[in-house]
Amino acid sequence: MNINLTLIGQSITFAIFVWFCMKFVWPPIVSALDARRKQIADGLAAADRGKHELELAARKSAESLHEAKQKAADIIGQAEKRAAQIIDEAKSAAKVEGDRQIAAAQAEIDQEIHRARESLREQVATLVVAGAEKVLRREVDAKAHGDLLEAIKNEL
Image (cartoon, rainbow, N blue to C red; front, side, top):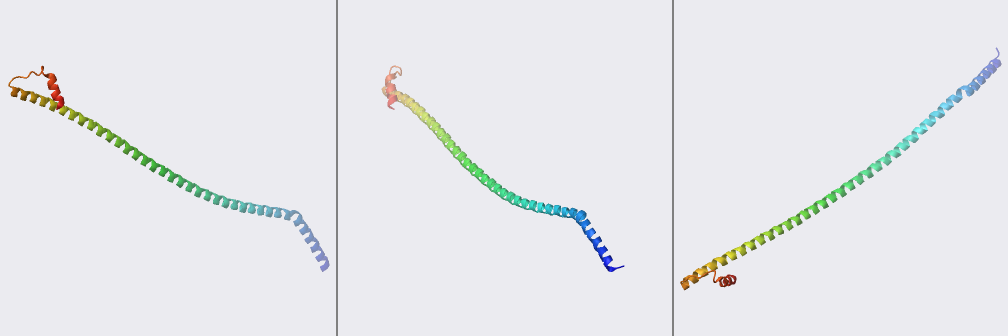
């Protein structure tokens, strides 16, 4: 055999093999590589979106936590103000009640003083009549001299 004929046969076989590979083998491999490249690119893009969304969620959660703390502080402040208001109202009510009880006690004391004075007037009037009776050695008629006794009672 001649080396040239062998070389030409091998070259033709190689060319047919290359053509066959380019026509039937290469397109599925290229499409598989393209699909894989697209899948990897989509995965990386999804990872970037996920990272960005994670950062946004972290910011939102920090803001929500800050707002919740602020609202809690506001609620506590309002509760403290309301507690102070309730205490002031209770103090005012207690003062009003105390003043009312003091006024009632003072009125009762005034009535007792008035009753005691009236009782003393009656007793003094009786003593005066008794004293006058002893001085005059005769009986004084309380009914007959009622106006006189009433005037003496009022002077006392």
